Image (cartoon, rainbow, N blue to C red; front, side, top):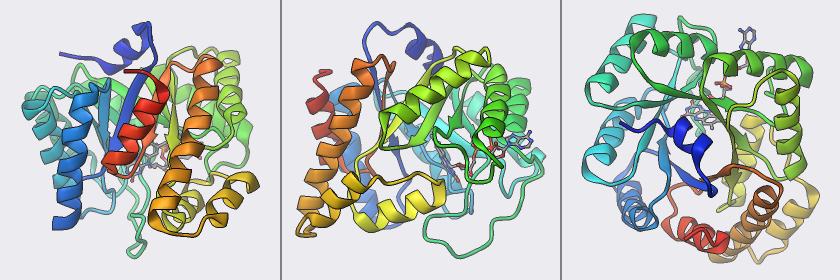
Length: 288
Ligand code: FAD
């Protein structure tokens, strides 16, 4: 049994973790296979598997989490959302994870899928904190939650969002942040939470933009600001996919460097299942 929050809290060196998406197409399945092979060589602290709150990849999350647990040396963290779910369904999913020996859950409210389309129905549980409570009642899970350094877009203001987050973290074991491009946003989040009595691990989520279009859509959905200096570098590029990826890695590495120098406990990377990008960031960080 491996409780990721305990590992992050006790680790003497910065942790390194990666978010992966369950594949939707044969091409994305092949990309994931490549990412898994490369990732295993890096011995990441864990990998977090996203959950399509909209529905189409829900079962795929479960399959991928179990496969990683059984067939690789990597510890998986299963994302789960309250959105569009009845309480009884969430209990059944958590029980299945418990029986399969999956101990790490990222409890979320959920967002509509990135490619837009269908409205996401509200779940029986309104907020991620309700899922944290439910998961505690089902099993001995290590529970992570989402944190938004710039505040969640639905919140009336940053103060209200921080208070809600602090309540959620009183029950959960750690947080992983939404991506951001300014290190000060992360350290303000950590300071604000400390003032509210929370000192649990907060892993910064760092995105290496691999495509301008995806970055713009994800930023719109999450409320993350794209600073002019980042925008300029990405748009100044000749727009070839390779150039964008190289610049994305550079931008991510500069941010990671500052985060680690200023005391972040590790780095959680969003690389959209891009094996090469993940390896480049890992090597660039000098963690190996
Ligand atoms: P909540 O904690 O419920 O917060 C949502 C809003 O409600 C905030 O404004 C908060 O301040 C407010 N709030 C919280 N509790 C209360 C309360 N008790 N009363 C009143 N207001 C309250 N989405 C997916 O669909 N699938 C994924 O796999 C996925 N993975 C993610 C991973 C990470 C690391 C992050 C940061 C986000 C991820 N998301 C994912 C996106 C996430 O679902 C969205 O950001 C969503 O809009 C909010 O989720 P949350 O868990 O922070 O919600």
